[in-house]
Image (cartoon, rainbow, N blue to C red; front, top):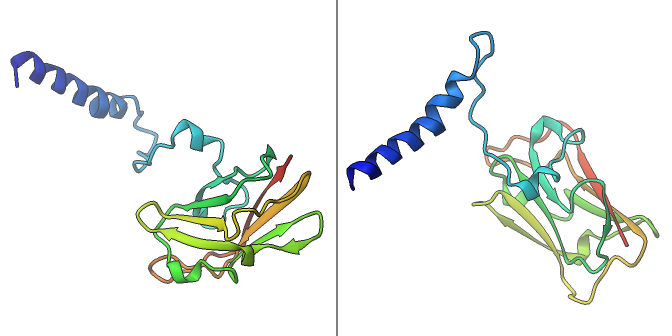
Length: 162
């Protein structure tokens, strides 16, 4: 590496690690490092419905409107590694509002531990939510993280389709 390259690397390291630490005042406790959210994820963060901050994001986002009714997947990303066996149709319910019908048995459940993301995909590719419908998803307090701890309360989010 050239001398100029080394200087640029040191400058980059200083910018990334030293300057942010200098901007904190002594009266503020240092926060533990957080994993930054991509801009597309920032709007999807579940807030008030999130017991113990277990759920990081959902797609569609909580409260999203005019979602395409042909959407085939729902994703829930957790803030920690989960027990995949606890993520199933008994602990994750999906209700469509027009007919107040449970839909979770219409989905395949796939948990990706490396991403801590549960993806629900329609079993039948021709399935849809219909038009002008509300979809509510509840994550039961009986889901478990990889250490066997359970959430303190149910977490719910929802979206509406065109």
